[in-house]
Amino acid sequence: MKDFRYLPGVSTLVLDTEACTGCGLCTIVCPHGVLAMAEKRVEIVDYDGCMECGACAQNCPTGAVGVTPGVGCAAAIINSWIKGGKPACC
Amino acid sequence: MEQDEKKEPAGCCGEKLSPSAAPCACKPPVPLEPFPMVRDDKVCCGPPTGPRSSSRERPGYRMWHFVEDFIDTPAGPVPLAKTVLNARDWLGKIRVRWGIRRDQYKVAPGLYGVGRPDASSPVLVTANYKLSFDALRSGAGVADAWILVVDTRGINVWCAAGKGTFSTEEVVRQVKSSQLDRVVDHRRLILPQLSATGVASRMVKKGCGFKVTWGPVRAADLGRFLDAGMRADEPMRRVTFTLAERITLVPVELSFLPRYLLWSLAAAFLLSGFGAGVFSFQAAWFRGALMVAALAGGVFAGAVAAPILLPWIPVRSFSVKGAIVGVAAGLAIVAGFREHVNTWEAAALLICTAVISSYLTMNFTGSTPYTSPSGVEKEMRRAIPFQAGAALVVPVLWVAAAFV
Ligand code: SF4
Ligand code: SF4
Image (cartoon, rainbow over all chains, first blue to last red; front, side, top):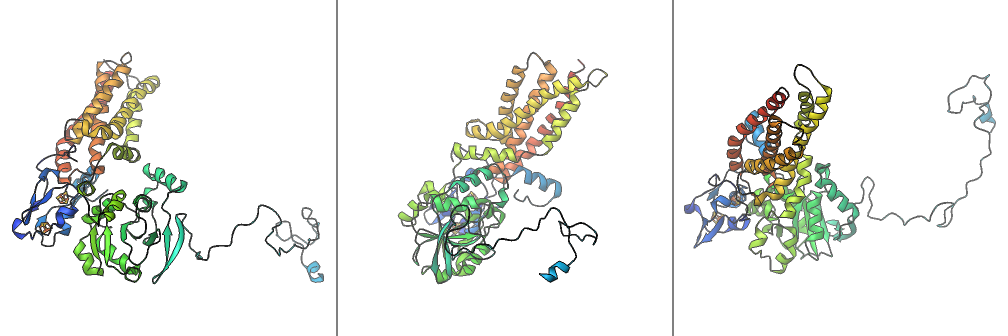
Protein backbone atom coordinates (compact mmCIF):
# COMPACT_ATOMS: atom_id res chain seq x y z
CA MET A 1 0.00 0.00 0.00
CA LYS A 2 3.01 2.26 -0.13
CA ASP A 3 1.85 3.51 -3.55
CA PHE A 4 -1.42 4.60 -1.96
CA ARG A 5 -0.94 7.59 0.30
CA TYR A 6 -3.69 9.88 1.42
CA LEU A 7 -3.55 13.31 3.06
CA PRO A 8 -0.76 13.40 5.67
CA GLY A 9 -0.98 14.57 9.25
CA VAL A 10 -4.70 14.07 9.78
CA SER A 11 -5.15 10.77 11.65
CA THR A 12 -6.63 10.84 15.13
CA LEU A 13 -4.40 7.94 16.22
CA VAL A 14 -2.83 8.38 19.64
CA LEU A 15 -0.53 6.07 21.55
CA ASP A 16 0.16 6.15 25.28
CA THR A 17 3.47 4.33 25.47
CA GLU A 18 3.30 4.24 29.27
CA ALA A 19 0.12 2.17 29.21
CA CYS A 20 1.36 -0.26 26.56
CA THR A 21 2.16 -3.74 27.84
CA GLY A 22 3.69 -4.87 24.58
CA CYS A 23 1.17 -7.61 23.90
CA GLY A 24 1.50 -6.93 20.16
CA LEU A 25 -2.17 -7.41 19.34
CA CYS A 26 -2.47 -4.02 17.65
CA THR A 27 0.41 -4.87 15.31
CA ILE A 28 -1.44 -8.01 14.23
CA VAL A 29 -4.83 -6.45 13.51
CA CYS A 30 -3.66 -3.23 11.80
CA PRO A 31 -4.16 -3.66 8.05
CA HIS A 32 -1.61 -0.97 7.19
CA GLY A 33 1.41 -1.78 9.34
CA VAL A 34 1.10 1.50 11.20
CA LEU A 35 2.27 0.05 14.51
CA ALA A 36 5.30 -2.12 15.18
CA MET A 37 7.01 -3.60 18.21
CA ALA A 38 10.13 -1.80 19.37
CA GLU A 39 11.86 -3.42 22.33
CA LYS A 40 9.04 -4.22 24.73
CA ARG A 41 6.55 -1.61 23.62
CA VAL A 42 4.80 -0.67 20.47
CA GLU A 43 5.52 2.43 18.45
CA ILE A 44 3.91 4.25 15.55
CA VAL A 45 6.08 3.63 12.50
CA ASP A 46 3.79 4.89 9.72
CA TYR A 47 1.44 7.50 11.14
CA ASP A 48 0.27 8.73 7.73
CA GLY A 49 -0.62 5.18 6.68
CA CYS A 50 -3.36 5.06 9.32
CA MET A 51 -6.90 4.97 7.91
CA GLU A 52 -8.59 5.25 11.32
CA CYS A 53 -10.29 1.86 11.04
CA GLY A 54 -10.17 1.40 14.79
CA ALA A 55 -9.03 -2.23 14.85
CA CYS A 56 -6.06 -1.44 17.10
CA ALA A 57 -8.07 0.47 19.69
CA GLN A 58 -10.84 -2.14 19.67
CA ASN A 59 -8.36 -4.88 20.56
CA CYS A 60 -5.88 -3.14 22.84
CA PRO A 61 -6.40 -4.62 26.32
CA THR A 62 -5.11 -1.55 28.17
CA GLY A 63 -6.50 1.30 26.09
CA ALA A 64 -2.98 2.40 25.25
CA VAL A 65 -3.83 3.07 21.65
CA GLY A 66 -6.82 5.17 20.66
CA VAL A 67 -8.38 6.50 17.50
CA THR A 68 -11.69 8.02 16.47
CA PRO A 69 -12.87 5.41 14.01
CA GLY A 70 -15.18 6.18 11.17
CA VAL A 71 -15.75 5.64 7.51
CA GLY A 72 -14.13 7.81 4.88
CA CYS A 73 -17.28 8.30 2.92
CA ALA A 74 -18.12 11.67 1.40
CA ALA A 75 -21.89 11.14 1.28
CA ALA A 76 -21.99 10.18 4.96
CA ILE A 77 -19.92 13.20 5.92
CA ILE A 78 -22.16 15.57 3.95
CA ASN A 79 -25.17 14.03 5.69
CA SER A 80 -23.56 14.60 9.06
CA TRP A 81 -22.92 18.24 8.15
CA ILE A 82 -26.52 18.73 7.16
CA LYS A 83 -28.24 16.71 9.85
CA GLY A 84 -25.61 17.01 12.56
CA GLY A 85 -24.24 14.09 14.49
CA LYS A 86 -21.54 11.60 13.65
CA PRO A 87 -21.03 10.32 10.11
CA ALA A 88 -22.51 6.86 9.73
CA CYS A 89 -21.46 4.38 7.11
CA CYS A 90 -23.36 4.63 3.87
CA MET B 1 -76.78 -40.50 -8.98
CA GLU B 2 -80.40 -39.71 -8.50
CA GLN B 3 -79.66 -36.99 -6.01
CA ASP B 4 -77.23 -35.35 -8.43
CA GLU B 5 -79.90 -34.98 -11.06
CA LYS B 6 -82.21 -33.23 -8.66
CA LYS B 7 -79.67 -30.53 -7.99
CA GLU B 8 -80.17 -27.17 -9.60
CA PRO B 9 -78.38 -27.02 -12.93
CA ALA B 10 -75.20 -25.00 -12.73
CA GLY B 11 -73.63 -22.84 -15.44
CA CYS B 12 -70.27 -23.51 -17.02
CA CYS B 13 -68.49 -21.52 -14.42
CA GLY B 14 -70.55 -22.68 -11.55
CA GLU B 15 -72.99 -19.77 -11.31
CA LYS B 16 -76.61 -20.66 -10.83
CA LEU B 17 -78.86 -20.70 -13.85
CA SER B 18 -82.56 -20.13 -13.81
CA PRO B 19 -84.48 -23.42 -13.97
CA SER B 20 -85.70 -22.58 -17.48
CA ALA B 21 -82.25 -22.15 -18.98
CA ALA B 22 -81.01 -24.75 -21.41
CA PRO B 23 -78.46 -27.24 -20.11
CA CYS B 24 -74.94 -25.94 -20.41
CA ALA B 25 -73.65 -26.44 -23.94
CA CYS B 26 -69.94 -26.15 -23.28
CA LYS B 27 -69.62 -29.13 -20.99
CA PRO B 28 -70.91 -32.23 -22.76
CA PRO B 29 -71.63 -35.00 -20.34
CA VAL B 30 -68.62 -37.18 -21.13
CA PRO B 31 -68.44 -40.20 -18.87
CA LEU B 32 -65.24 -40.15 -16.82
CA GLU B 33 -62.66 -42.76 -17.66
CA PRO B 34 -61.36 -44.60 -14.65
CA PHE B 35 -57.96 -43.08 -13.78
CA PRO B 36 -55.23 -45.71 -14.18
CA MET B 37 -53.44 -46.17 -10.87
CA VAL B 38 -49.64 -46.28 -11.20
CA ARG B 39 -48.33 -49.30 -9.41
CA ASP B 40 -44.72 -49.15 -10.51
CA ASP B 41 -42.29 -46.26 -11.19
CA LYS B 42 -43.58 -45.75 -14.71
CA VAL B 43 -45.79 -42.75 -15.28
CA CYS B 44 -48.39 -42.24 -17.90
CA CYS B 45 -46.64 -39.38 -19.68
CA GLY B 46 -43.48 -37.26 -19.70
CA PRO B 47 -39.98 -38.26 -18.70
CA PRO B 48 -39.37 -40.65 -15.81
CA THR B 49 -39.79 -39.18 -12.33
CA GLY B 50 -36.81 -37.89 -10.36
CA PRO B 51 -35.54 -39.42 -7.14
CA ARG B 52 -37.45 -39.29 -3.85
CA SER B 53 -37.00 -36.08 -1.80
CA SER B 54 -33.91 -36.07 0.38
CA SER B 55 -34.58 -37.02 3.97
CA ARG B 56 -32.80 -33.75 4.89
CA GLU B 57 -35.55 -31.65 3.39
CA ARG B 58 -37.88 -29.94 5.85
CA PRO B 59 -41.31 -28.46 5.25
CA GLY B 60 -41.07 -24.70 4.91
CA TYR B 61 -37.36 -24.64 4.06
CA ARG B 62 -35.61 -24.67 0.74
CA MET B 63 -32.34 -26.48 0.21
CA TRP B 64 -29.52 -24.18 -1.00
CA HIS B 65 -27.87 -25.26 -4.21
CA PHE B 66 -24.42 -25.06 -2.59
CA VAL B 67 -25.22 -27.70 0.03
CA GLU B 68 -23.91 -31.06 -1.11
CA ASP B 69 -24.53 -33.16 1.96
CA PHE B 70 -25.05 -33.08 5.69
CA ILE B 71 -22.84 -34.32 8.47
CA ASP B 72 -24.23 -35.46 11.80
CA THR B 73 -22.77 -33.83 14.87
CA PRO B 74 -23.69 -33.85 18.56
CA ALA B 75 -25.39 -30.51 17.85
CA GLY B 76 -27.48 -31.95 15.02
CA PRO B 77 -26.95 -32.20 11.25
CA VAL B 78 -24.66 -29.56 9.74
CA PRO B 79 -24.77 -28.74 6.00
CA LEU B 80 -21.61 -29.34 4.02
CA ALA B 81 -20.99 -26.66 1.41
CA LYS B 82 -19.58 -27.36 -2.03
CA THR B 83 -16.09 -26.01 -2.58
CA VAL B 84 -16.65 -25.25 -6.25
CA LEU B 85 -18.86 -22.38 -7.37
CA ASN B 86 -21.48 -23.20 -9.98
CA ALA B 87 -23.20 -21.07 -12.61
CA ARG B 88 -25.74 -19.72 -10.13
CA ASP B 89 -23.02 -18.52 -7.78
CA TRP B 90 -21.21 -16.80 -10.65
CA LEU B 91 -24.36 -15.16 -11.98
CA GLY B 92 -25.18 -13.93 -8.50
CA LYS B 93 -21.68 -12.58 -8.14
CA ILE B 94 -21.92 -10.66 -11.40
CA ARG B 95 -25.33 -9.33 -10.39
CA VAL B 96 -24.27 -7.95 -7.03
CA ARG B 97 -21.07 -6.56 -8.52
CA TRP B 98 -23.39 -4.31 -10.50
CA GLY B 99 -25.09 -3.30 -7.29
CA ILE B 100 -28.35 -5.09 -8.09
CA ARG B 101 -30.17 -6.22 -4.95
CA ARG B 102 -26.84 -6.35 -3.20
CA ASP B 103 -28.44 -6.08 0.22
CA GLN B 104 -30.40 -9.26 -0.48
CA TYR B 105 -27.39 -11.48 -1.13
CA LYS B 106 -27.29 -13.41 2.11
CA VAL B 107 -26.85 -16.92 3.41
CA ALA B 108 -28.47 -18.14 6.61
CA PRO B 109 -26.21 -17.56 9.62
CA GLY B 110 -25.04 -20.66 11.46
CA LEU B 111 -22.61 -23.53 11.19
CA TYR B 112 -21.53 -25.09 7.90
CA GLY B 113 -18.74 -27.41 6.92
CA VAL B 114 -16.44 -27.99 3.98
CA GLY B 115 -14.80 -31.31 3.20
CA ARG B 116 -15.20 -33.83 6.02
CA PRO B 117 -14.65 -31.82 9.20
CA ASP B 118 -14.35 -33.53 12.58
CA ALA B 119 -14.09 -32.40 16.18
CA SER B 120 -10.53 -31.19 15.73
CA SER B 121 -11.07 -29.24 12.50
CA PRO B 122 -10.52 -25.47 12.51
CA VAL B 123 -13.47 -23.10 12.76
CA LEU B 124 -13.38 -20.27 10.21
CA VAL B 125 -15.69 -17.35 10.90
CA THR B 126 -17.18 -15.11 8.23
CA ALA B 127 -20.02 -12.73 7.39
CA ASN B 128 -23.36 -13.83 5.98
CA TYR B 129 -22.86 -11.80 2.78
CA LYS B 130 -22.93 -14.57 0.21
CA LEU B 131 -19.81 -13.31 -1.60
CA SER B 132 -17.85 -13.53 1.66
CA PHE B 133 -19.18 -17.03 2.27
CA ASP B 134 -18.48 -18.10 -1.33
CA ALA B 135 -14.92 -16.77 -1.15
CA LEU B 136 -14.34 -18.82 1.97
CA ARG B 137 -15.86 -22.11 0.82
CA SER B 138 -14.37 -22.03 -2.67
CA GLY B 139 -11.17 -20.05 -2.44
CA ALA B 140 -9.68 -20.74 0.96
CA GLY B 141 -7.86 -23.92 -0.04
CA VAL B 142 -8.70 -25.54 3.29
CA ALA B 143 -9.50 -29.24 3.06
CA ASP B 144 -11.69 -29.91 6.10
CA ALA B 145 -13.08 -27.09 8.19
CA TRP B 146 -16.12 -25.68 9.92
CA ILE B 147 -17.46 -22.35 8.72
CA LEU B 148 -19.31 -20.26 11.28
CA VAL B 149 -21.42 -17.68 9.49
CA VAL B 150 -22.23 -14.66 11.64
CA ASP B 151 -25.36 -12.59 11.06
CA THR B 152 -23.87 -9.36 9.70
CA ARG B 153 -27.20 -8.52 7.98
CA GLY B 154 -25.76 -9.58 4.63
CA ILE B 155 -22.87 -7.11 4.70
CA ASN B 156 -19.27 -8.00 3.90
CA VAL B 157 -16.67 -8.50 6.62
CA TRP B 158 -14.96 -5.12 6.67
CA CYS B 159 -18.02 -2.93 6.17
CA ALA B 160 -19.93 -4.96 8.73
CA ALA B 161 -17.11 -4.61 11.26
CA GLY B 162 -17.10 -0.85 10.65
CA LYS B 163 -20.87 -0.64 10.98
CA GLY B 164 -20.88 -2.76 14.09
CA THR B 165 -22.87 -5.71 12.74
CA PHE B 166 -19.79 -7.97 12.70
CA SER B 167 -19.34 -7.48 16.41
CA THR B 168 -18.13 -9.24 19.51
CA GLU B 169 -21.73 -9.85 20.60
CA GLU B 170 -22.74 -11.27 17.24
CA VAL B 171 -19.83 -13.73 17.23
CA VAL B 172 -20.57 -14.83 20.79
CA ARG B 173 -24.27 -15.24 20.00
CA GLN B 174 -23.56 -17.37 16.93
CA VAL B 175 -21.05 -19.58 18.75
CA LYS B 176 -23.68 -20.25 21.40
CA SER B 177 -26.68 -20.72 19.14
CA SER B 178 -24.73 -23.11 16.91
CA GLN B 179 -23.64 -25.07 20.00
CA LEU B 180 -20.12 -25.00 18.68
CA ASP B 181 -18.76 -26.33 21.98
CA ARG B 182 -20.56 -29.61 21.28
CA VAL B 183 -19.26 -29.88 17.72
CA VAL B 184 -15.54 -29.30 18.24
CA ASP B 185 -13.24 -30.33 21.06
CA HIS B 186 -10.88 -27.35 20.78
CA ARG B 187 -11.75 -23.76 21.74
CA ARG B 188 -10.36 -21.66 18.90
CA LEU B 189 -12.00 -19.44 16.28
CA ILE B 190 -10.19 -18.09 13.23
CA LEU B 191 -11.57 -14.66 12.39
CA PRO B 192 -10.77 -12.61 9.30
CA GLN B 193 -8.33 -9.88 10.28
CA LEU B 194 -10.55 -7.16 8.87
CA SER B 195 -13.28 -7.99 11.39
CA ALA B 196 -10.97 -6.70 14.14
CA THR B 197 -12.50 -3.27 13.67
CA GLY B 198 -15.71 -4.61 15.22
CA VAL B 199 -14.57 -7.58 17.30
CA ALA B 200 -12.49 -7.43 20.49
CA SER B 201 -10.77 -10.78 20.79
CA ARG B 202 -10.52 -10.79 24.57
CA MET B 203 -14.25 -10.11 24.90
CA VAL B 204 -15.09 -13.07 22.65
CA LYS B 205 -13.05 -15.29 24.99
CA LYS B 206 -14.90 -13.87 27.96
CA GLY B 207 -18.27 -14.24 26.27
CA CYS B 208 -18.13 -17.81 24.96
CA GLY B 209 -14.82 -19.34 26.00
CA PHE B 210 -13.43 -19.49 22.48
CA LYS B 211 -10.07 -17.87 21.81
CA VAL B 212 -9.77 -15.70 18.71
CA THR B 213 -6.91 -16.21 16.29
CA TRP B 214 -6.65 -13.47 13.71
CA GLY B 215 -6.55 -15.02 10.27
CA PRO B 216 -5.25 -13.33 7.14
CA VAL B 217 -6.99 -10.39 5.44
CA ARG B 218 -7.91 -12.47 2.38
CA ALA B 219 -9.69 -15.83 2.47
CA ALA B 220 -7.40 -17.01 -0.33
CA ASP B 221 -4.46 -17.00 2.10
CA LEU B 222 -6.16 -19.23 4.68
CA GLY B 223 -4.74 -22.48 3.39
CA ARG B 224 -1.18 -21.21 3.64
CA PHE B 225 -1.96 -19.61 6.99
CA LEU B 226 -3.09 -22.93 8.46
CA ASP B 227 -0.22 -24.86 6.87
CA ALA B 228 2.21 -22.43 8.46
CA GLY B 229 0.82 -23.24 11.90
CA MET B 230 -1.60 -20.29 12.05
CA ARG B 231 1.08 -17.80 11.26
CA ALA B 232 0.52 -14.95 8.84
CA ASP B 233 3.38 -13.33 7.01
CA GLU B 234 3.47 -9.59 6.38
CA PRO B 235 1.61 -9.55 3.00
CA MET B 236 -1.23 -11.64 4.47
CA ARG B 237 -1.79 -8.93 7.08
CA ARG B 238 -1.97 -5.99 4.68
CA VAL B 239 -4.88 -4.79 2.60
CA THR B 240 -4.20 -4.17 -1.08
CA PHE B 241 -5.89 -2.11 -3.74
CA THR B 242 -4.79 -3.72 -6.95
CA LEU B 243 -5.89 -2.82 -10.45
CA ALA B 244 -8.22 -5.82 -10.48
CA GLU B 245 -9.75 -4.78 -7.14
CA ARG B 246 -10.32 -1.26 -8.42
CA ILE B 247 -11.90 -2.46 -11.65
CA THR B 248 -14.28 -4.65 -9.65
CA LEU B 249 -15.54 -1.52 -7.89
CA VAL B 250 -16.38 0.38 -11.08
CA PRO B 251 -19.81 -1.17 -11.77
CA VAL B 252 -20.90 -0.58 -8.18
CA GLU B 253 -19.74 3.03 -8.42
CA LEU B 254 -21.82 3.44 -11.56
CA SER B 255 -24.86 1.89 -9.90
CA PHE B 256 -24.52 4.35 -7.01
CA LEU B 257 -24.56 7.45 -9.23
CA PRO B 258 -26.39 10.26 -7.49
CA ARG B 259 -29.99 10.60 -8.62
CA TYR B 260 -29.68 14.33 -9.21
CA LEU B 261 -27.59 13.61 -12.30
CA LEU B 262 -30.91 12.81 -13.94
CA TRP B 263 -32.20 16.25 -13.01
CA SER B 264 -29.11 17.85 -14.46
CA LEU B 265 -29.87 15.98 -17.69
CA ALA B 266 -33.31 17.58 -17.84
CA ALA B 267 -31.88 20.97 -16.92
CA ALA B 268 -29.26 20.61 -19.67
CA PHE B 269 -31.92 20.28 -22.36
CA LEU B 270 -34.05 23.05 -20.92
CA LEU B 271 -31.22 25.56 -20.58
CA SER B 272 -29.91 24.72 -24.03
CA GLY B 273 -33.09 25.96 -25.66
CA PHE B 274 -32.71 29.58 -24.55
CA GLY B 275 -31.34 31.83 -27.26
CA ALA B 276 -31.64 35.46 -28.21
CA GLY B 277 -35.20 36.15 -27.07
CA VAL B 278 -36.71 32.82 -28.07
CA PHE B 279 -36.83 29.27 -26.87
CA SER B 280 -35.77 27.01 -29.71
CA PHE B 281 -36.52 23.31 -29.59
CA GLN B 282 -33.89 22.67 -32.20
CA ALA B 283 -31.26 24.37 -30.06
CA ALA B 284 -32.57 22.55 -26.99
CA TRP B 285 -32.06 19.29 -28.78
CA PHE B 286 -28.66 19.95 -30.34
CA ARG B 287 -26.99 21.92 -27.56
CA GLY B 288 -28.65 19.69 -24.99
CA ALA B 289 -26.95 16.70 -26.59
CA LEU B 290 -23.60 18.48 -26.25
CA MET B 291 -24.23 19.01 -22.56
CA VAL B 292 -25.22 15.37 -22.13
CA ALA B 293 -21.90 14.40 -23.70
CA ALA B 294 -20.14 16.55 -21.09
CA LEU B 295 -22.15 14.98 -18.25
CA ALA B 296 -21.40 11.50 -19.54
CA GLY B 297 -17.75 12.41 -19.92
CA GLY B 298 -17.68 13.58 -16.31
CA VAL B 299 -19.27 10.36 -15.09
CA PHE B 300 -16.84 8.28 -17.10
CA ALA B 301 -13.86 10.27 -15.83
CA GLY B 302 -14.94 10.29 -12.18
CA ALA B 303 -16.49 6.86 -11.75
CA VAL B 304 -14.47 4.77 -14.22
CA ALA B 305 -11.19 6.38 -15.29
CA ALA B 306 -10.08 8.02 -12.04
CA PRO B 307 -10.68 4.92 -9.84
CA ILE B 308 -8.71 2.79 -12.30
CA LEU B 309 -5.88 5.29 -12.73
CA LEU B 310 -5.88 6.18 -9.01
CA PRO B 311 -2.25 5.45 -7.99
CA TRP B 312 -0.86 6.95 -11.17
CA ILE B 313 -2.46 10.37 -10.85
CA PRO B 314 0.28 12.31 -9.06
CA VAL B 315 -1.68 14.12 -6.32
CA ARG B 316 -3.17 12.83 -3.07
CA SER B 317 -6.44 14.68 -2.90
CA PHE B 318 -9.20 12.70 -4.63
CA SER B 319 -11.11 15.78 -5.75
CA VAL B 320 -7.99 17.05 -7.53
CA LYS B 321 -7.32 13.62 -9.03
CA GLY B 322 -10.88 13.66 -10.35
CA ALA B 323 -10.58 17.21 -11.67
CA ILE B 324 -7.39 16.32 -13.58
CA VAL B 325 -8.99 13.32 -15.27
CA GLY B 326 -12.15 15.35 -15.83
CA VAL B 327 -10.27 18.16 -17.59
CA ALA B 328 -8.61 15.59 -19.83
CA ALA B 329 -11.99 14.08 -20.69
CA GLY B 330 -13.49 17.55 -21.20
CA LEU B 331 -10.69 18.57 -23.57
CA ALA B 332 -11.33 15.43 -25.60
CA ILE B 333 -15.03 16.26 -25.82
CA VAL B 334 -14.42 19.89 -26.78
CA ALA B 335 -11.90 18.80 -29.41
CA GLY B 336 -14.44 16.37 -30.81
CA PHE B 337 -17.11 19.09 -31.16
CA ARG B 338 -14.82 22.05 -31.95
CA GLU B 339 -16.71 22.92 -35.14
CA HIS B 340 -19.99 23.23 -33.27
CA VAL B 341 -19.09 25.21 -30.15
CA ASN B 342 -17.89 28.72 -29.45
CA THR B 343 -15.33 29.58 -26.75
CA TRP B 344 -17.95 30.10 -24.04
CA GLU B 345 -19.60 26.82 -24.75
CA ALA B 346 -16.25 25.05 -24.81
CA ALA B 347 -15.47 26.50 -21.37
CA ALA B 348 -18.85 25.42 -20.01
CA LEU B 349 -18.44 21.87 -21.31
CA LEU B 350 -14.93 21.62 -19.89
CA ILE B 351 -15.90 22.87 -16.43
CA CYS B 352 -18.97 20.64 -16.36
CA THR B 353 -16.93 17.51 -17.06
CA ALA B 354 -14.25 18.46 -14.55
CA VAL B 355 -16.63 19.28 -11.70
CA ILE B 356 -18.65 16.08 -12.04
CA SER B 357 -15.50 14.02 -12.23
CA SER B 358 -14.02 15.81 -9.23
CA TYR B 359 -17.10 15.20 -7.09
CA LEU B 360 -17.52 11.55 -8.08
CA THR B 361 -13.85 10.80 -7.47
CA MET B 362 -14.10 12.44 -4.07
CA ASN B 363 -17.02 10.12 -3.37
CA PHE B 364 -14.82 7.18 -4.29
CA THR B 365 -12.90 7.70 -1.02
CA GLY B 366 -15.72 5.71 0.57
CA SER B 367 -14.75 2.64 -1.44
CA THR B 368 -11.00 2.62 -0.94
CA PRO B 369 -9.24 0.73 1.85
CA TYR B 370 -6.84 3.50 2.83
CA THR B 371 -8.54 6.88 3.13
CA SER B 372 -8.99 8.10 6.70
CA PRO B 373 -12.29 9.83 7.57
CA SER B 374 -10.37 12.76 9.01
CA GLY B 375 -8.58 13.14 5.70
CA VAL B 376 -11.81 12.89 3.72
CA GLU B 377 -13.45 15.54 5.86
CA LYS B 378 -10.47 17.86 5.49
CA GLU B 379 -10.45 17.38 1.75
CA MET B 380 -14.18 18.01 1.49
CA ARG B 381 -14.01 21.26 3.43
CA ARG B 382 -11.55 22.53 0.86
CA ALA B 383 -13.03 21.04 -2.29
CA ILE B 384 -16.76 21.53 -1.95
CA PRO B 385 -16.74 25.36 -2.20
CA PHE B 386 -14.78 25.08 -5.46
CA GLN B 387 -17.03 22.35 -6.80
CA ALA B 388 -20.19 24.26 -5.91
CA GLY B 389 -18.85 27.47 -7.46
CA ALA B 390 -17.85 25.71 -10.65
CA ALA B 391 -21.19 23.93 -10.83
CA LEU B 392 -22.94 27.33 -10.77
CA VAL B 393 -20.69 28.78 -13.44
CA VAL B 394 -21.61 26.07 -15.95
CA PRO B 395 -25.28 27.02 -16.60
CA VAL B 396 -24.42 30.73 -16.59
CA LEU B 397 -21.76 30.26 -19.26
CA TRP B 398 -23.97 27.91 -21.20
CA VAL B 399 -26.92 30.27 -21.42
CA ALA B 400 -24.67 33.31 -22.02
CA ALA B 401 -22.96 31.49 -24.88
CA ALA B 402 -26.22 31.43 -26.82
CA PHE B 403 -26.35 35.21 -26.84
CA VAL B 404 -22.83 36.01 -28.04
S1 SF4 C 1 -6.78 2.77 13.21
FE1 SF4 C 1 -6.54 1.02 11.82
S2 SF4 C 1 -5.02 1.72 10.33
FE2 SF4 C 1 -4.87 3.10 12.08
S3 SF4 C 1 -3.29 2.21 13.35
FE3 SF4 C 1 -5.23 1.44 14.12
S4 SF4 C 1 -5.49 -0.50 13.05
FE4 SF4 C 1 -3.91 0.63 11.94
S1 SF4 D 1 -2.51 -3.69 21.84
FE1 SF4 D 1 -2.19 -2.06 23.33
S2 SF4 D 1 -0.98 -2.99 24.95
FE2 SF4 D 1 -0.86 -4.38 23.18
S3 SF4 D 1 1.00 -3.73 22.10
FE3 SF4 D 1 -0.69 -2.58 21.19
S4 SF4 D 1 -0.78 -0.66 22.34
FE4 SF4 D 1 0.49 -2.07 23.53
